[in-house]
Amino acid sequence: MKKVISLVMVMALVMCLMAGCGSTNETADPTEAPAEAEAEAEVETASEGGSFYIGGIGPITGDNAIYGMAVMNGAQIAVDEINAAGGINGYTVEYKFEDDVADGETAVNAYNNLMDWGMQVLVGPTTTGSAISVSAKVYEERVFALTPSASSPDVTAGKDNMFQLCFTDPNQGSGSAVYMGANMPEAKVAVIYRNDDAYSQGIRDTFVAEAANQNLEVVYEGTFTEDTATDFSVQLTAAQAAGADLVFLPIYYQPASVILAQANAMGYAPTFFGVDGMDGILTLEGFDTSLAEGVMVLTPFSATAEDELTQNFVAEYSARYGETPNQFAADGYDCVYALKQAMENAGCTPDMSAEEICNAMVEQFTSMSFSGLTGTDMTWSAAGEVSKMPVAVMVKDGVYVTAEA
Image (cartoon, rainbow, N blue to C red; front, top):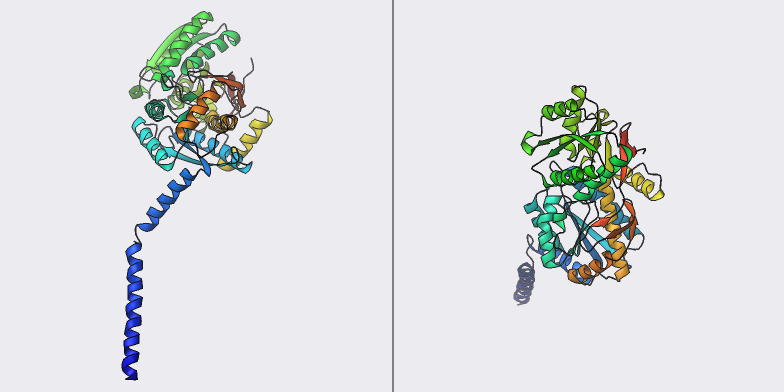
């Protein structure tokens, strides 16, 4: 009898244990639950209001990666500094950057990913095409966006919540002409631009118009397209024959590097003058930087400036990433700090919706003044355009230095 009772008790215990195990297996899927729990926790964190969620979009792979990487890295330094100093209104900042390979459709997908993550404010997109594509989304969904470097007026046109930290294309063109008129009035100017690119065409148009006002002599204009950006012998020969001693290049650094190499090979040595798209040529893989000696660029940022803010930023950026920051890195840094100032002025808290923060940002940006790495006493118009003064820099011994007037 004792053996029978013992056997019954053992069987009952085993049945209980099996029931308990069965219950556990029904409520936890070892392949799906961790991912689902992580996603739920992430959404919950964003909605609880413990941190501000700032997103970024730009190319960190592909031909234009130098721009997006610089923006991403510069903004990251700003976020880290702000969090170390107590955050924004006492709240930390979460920062996430999405790659768009400088493609409009990919940029929209990146924006949607960031919104799923909980983004409340956007730094970006970095390039003009992507920014134009995303601007319609931020306008429709009322998310405030501050692009560090998308310079076309089309980026902000008709969108009251899309702002620019960079000079617009028209300002770059007219600003370059004004600088030349003041400092190189006797120059004979040639212009080489890409006629199938809104960025290059827009800067060229305003440059030529202002050059006439400055009494600059434009002796030659040559064009190219994306498909013909490998041989500039015709344009350079014509510029040289016209007597041009100053060549204006409202283009990106990749074709500019080809122009510099071909001009050197043919013994043509004018002064080359570029705009913000030229920034990046000194870190272009495989490019002989000695070919850029003497190149001038109109820019809002010089890494050799002696003010404390610039020197601290350059030192930190160089220590982290092993290179000297360009203006795109400085633009990314300034974007985050400009947002911080506006959010603090407005008393924003993380539990506010993206639309509530957007409305507050629009009001602040159209009324405040901001000073940073890329300018002092910056202000913004209701159209989202920034007002600040550029400086001319020149490549000397492989680095940019402030150009002498």
